[in-house]
Length: 244
Image (cartoon, rainbow, N blue to C red; front, side):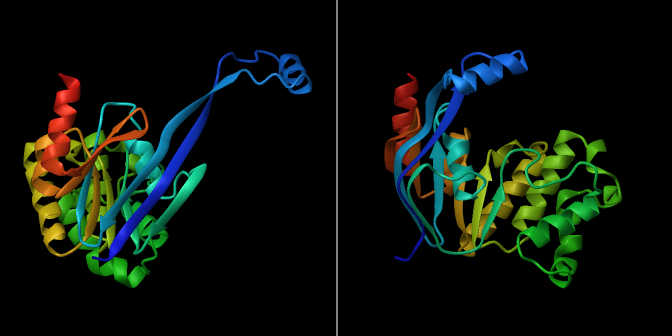
């Protein structure tokens, strides 16, 4: 089966400062003496997995386990410190609130800017423009600046824009937090339709029942490392056992 995503021993490190240099002089002295008062935090350590073309793959784990960092690496928002990554296909990402949108622009302007970033021309965006706003139920607010949107409206527009871009690979972080219960069901139905159409998906979520329903395979992260991987039912069971 053709692989859409293949990661081999991906690691990502962050530097966490211990103390704050309160003055310019303290900062200069620190540089001169080469006193780097920080610790290294490995958000990801030797993570390897593959996702076949057209497969839905779930990533679960406790808060701080490295799930969102991994999605950002896949989306090329962050770059790994070591390891190799192969992605075959155009990637569309729906990450946390705020990524990809500009609050000072209107909803309409943001849709066109975001689509251009993803490589879509204006004519292509024109064809799906009405679908985006109808699905998000925000047609009457299309000329409002995003900074005046509620968080729910913001998330609905972001989700609707991402799923209407005809993605080959879709990355989703806590997508089930969008909107109310009615919009949640609508979103779940849209994801199911895309899965049946052969879109490759990587889904990060704390909603374990949805991971089991949507994803044939899954992976659990614990402190940045792969703690379990395989059939989604087994991985979810391993996660619940770890929590108990």
